[in-house]
Length: 530
Image (tube, rainbow, N blue to C red; front, side, top):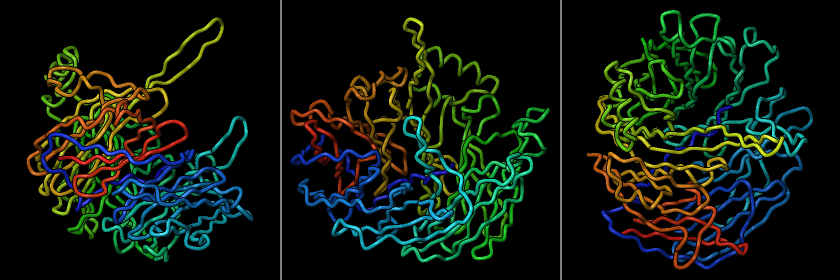
């Protein structure tokens, strides 16, 4: 099920100048809040966290300047069987969204949060009611079913003036070849006044199409990109090893729900992941990764095109990843393999997943991919065999494509992160502002001065690490790398439970994040870069 797309934080007021060292400040400790869901927001020199446990919502306020804890409010008045959907900032509003199955109806509620006071603004508001059941993810505790979560997905327009809430009804017919998806779509303004809402029946059966992405424009029109198969099979290759599908972009008109569509001929390109974005110039931009059918998880290059308001697809471009980029920070064995494959035009990035697409004001596009995969392992003790998973978050590939569809630059940021507790403190944080792009993540100290012909040393999740910052100049792609801090020694303190998603750009050259210091206490850490 589609979830909220994680947008790049674009902070026009927040930027790094060239820096050589960092000033670290640790605030006073405050009581830890144990909660499986934590959300962080910043505004006017303050930080607000919203932490949600099953029976309780805790809203904290802290100063991003002094790092002092300001206040906390706790609420336990949400309905007994609610399911958290998300906590979002929508323009200058903040909302906690939750769903509730009651009276044989699926309902979506929004409860507004006042940032200044760090408290809820009145009771929850019901914004969607559905008489049918909605597809989602079953949540279980032990052997007990606790309900269905992730039933609603949230997508913003480019200017953040419109929000589409999307859901999928449970099919009446179980056979995909006979069942047509019915997608609920509701578009809201920042006050959650509904612009329009409708249930839209897809033009193809579930078997015939795979929905890849949704988007919404400022006028409230909804766009959907889908993979539509050429025949009644779900084979991605035809008999000639070409794609057995077309990419189809569907525009669902605001108010009426009327569908118009346009097909994209891929020739020999297989789409791995694809997203739609509105631009400041007007047309939608489609951007994604493709391969030539060798491996589902491999990437040969990028594909981009424009989808105009009249329904035409124009300016389709494909950009291949140069073998020179593929051969940076890899083993000699991999380098030789890539060079051999390149002779047959088959060199590719393995396990590369598109993670972020940033459409800039001038029409250029930043695409960010990360090597993201897991491996399955088995351990045997006596007659007992245990299965466990190891999660890998490796190199980051950053590419800029200019407004004319030409590659401006492409950079590989080397890392090798590994852990056994899901994502944990791995992956990266992407921030943009003032003509530069920043990538922050925990790394092994040995990689500070890593040559391009060497493989990065491994960073093990949960064992501390060094916070690295990569700064990329937007115009030139010039790269600067700085080691910011060692989480095992920050003013003599060891920081635990570091997560890139907790990092906030709060002022000029300034980052603030929350960490656990043990003894049931959290602290705020401020990083000011010279």
